[in-house]
Image (cartoon, rainbow over all chains, first blue to last red; front, side):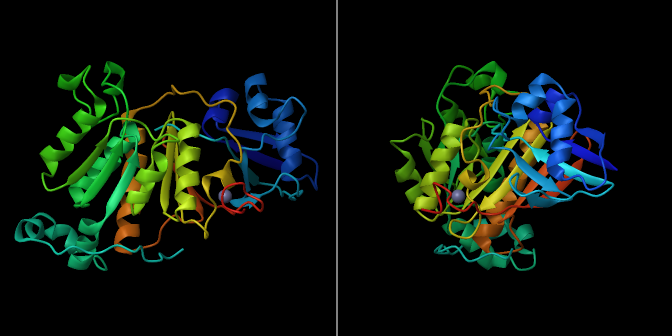
Length: 92
Length: 255
Ligand SMILES: [Zn+2]
């Protein structure tokens, strides 16, 4: 199944585009989709998402099909799901 | 989410004000009563740069009675692509002076409290305390977290808006009801830099939205972005509203 990762702001810039689609196995979660994206994007984008220890950066906000999700709670995705990933911004 | 009323003392309008604001008092649910509430309100705007310039200009046009504006430094050439209260003639002069002058040209009735420094540990409590509503337009997370902490502590609503490149976001924080900034971002984001890519039309877009949020909160009309984060990508003109939740154990609003 296909899941689209929609990157916001600095993450979109670091990844080179805002929309990225990944092919995942049936039953995959939003967390699997983000890991798959991180494994196949730029080093700069990966560093915005995950700490050196492999934990999600605590300032990342995740929304699966517009609903907020927590990294610690696996959220089942479906074919055609979109995962919106917001990196924090402060431009004034 | 509907609005809970802010404790603002409405101030009666004079004939000049009635004439100036006539067209907006035709807005249903707003009327002269809404205008009197705007006149009675004090709004704190933290920095009048790309975002805050437009917020302040729109609120001055709308007839907010009193504004506390905090912004340090002198006008630089690189301000002029977006900081619409700064003018070429004011290059090298204090930004706050340029902002005040420009706002007075538009609305000489506006009471301005010019603060020639950014919001910091020493002044945050005082200026937040004097305002009915705060609008966070600072370019650094340190300043934003400070405003957030103070707004939550003093139970002042805060319109939180920010931009980067062609993207922007905005939410309204109602202490005790909605997530605060620290619920969304529990620590200082590691990758944020003080200088960022920006068009004035992007900061201006979210600045207008923030001004509208402020008008609605003060007048008690419409629905605010409390508990919702509106993100926008002006590269594709995609606008999304996301529900956001309070973070249990938040160091600022859940202690
Ligand atoms: Zn909080």
